[in-house]
Image (cartoon, rainbow, N blue to C red; front, side, top):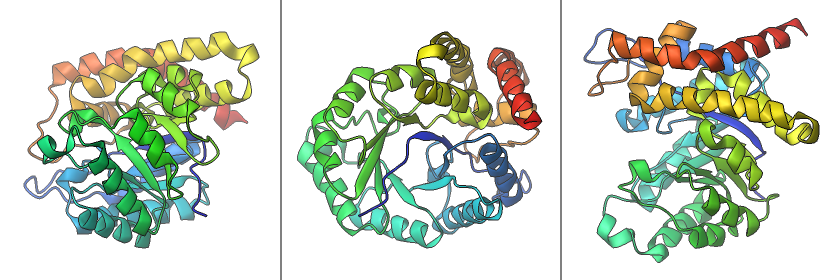
Length: 322
C-alpha cells in the first residue's frame, strides 16, 4: 500500500536564484538548504518543492531535479522527519509521469499535480477527462499522488467535489491541496472520504482554521515561509488542545489573515521573496519576466506582516529556550 500523507503543515518553498548574471539567474542551492533547515527547525511536517511558489514553470527539468536533490539531502543531513513533496505538473499523462519518475529518483516522497487545463474548452466541463488523467497517472506513478486544485493558475479549471471524492478511492491518490478557498467544498470532500487514506489540506494560511473546522487535516501555506512557528502552533493547538485553547487558536488565525494576504497576494512571488529578503536576510528575486517589488511596496508589506511576525518571534524564542 502507498504511504498515506500525514496531517500537518507542508510549506511550499520558493526556488532561490543568484542575482548575477541577471539574464541567467542560476539556482542558489545554498540558500535553498538554509531555508529548509529554518523550516524544519520550526517544526513543519514537510516541504513542497516545484509548486506555484517554487516557480516550477520557470525551471527546466535539470533545475527541478537539482532543487529536489538539494532538499532531499538537506532533510536527511539534519535527520528531519519532514516529508518531501514535488510538484510534477504537465499537461499530458506521459509528461507528468516523466516528471514524477525523475522526482522519485531525486528523493521526493509524494507528487503534487495540477489538472490539465491548456485545452480548456475540452476539459473544463468534462469531469471524465480529469478523472481519466489522474487515474492514469496514479496507476503508473512510483510515488503517491496529491491532487492540486488551484483555479488561479489553470484558467479557472476547478475540479468538482464529486470527481475529487471519486479519485480519493484510488489507492495511489492520497490527498488534495485546496487552493480554491472553498470551505463548503472541502467539507463535502472530508465527509465523503476516509481521513486515514485521503488527506485534505487547505491551500492558504488565511483560511487554515475554517478548513480544519470542517475536517481538513493540514495546510500548504506560502505564509509558512516567513512565519512557520505561527502556522505550526495553530495546527498543534487545534489538534492537541482544542477545548482549552480555542481563544488562542482564534487569535492566531486573526493575526495570520491580513499578514498572509500582504505576504503573497499584493505582489505575488516577487512580494513574497522581497519580504523574505527584508525579514530573513535571503529571498532574492523571482526569475524573469517577473519584476522586482518596489521599495515602497516592500515597506507596506513588511509593516502588514509585523503583527504575525511578533507572535512568530515569541514562539521561536520559547522553542529555543526549551
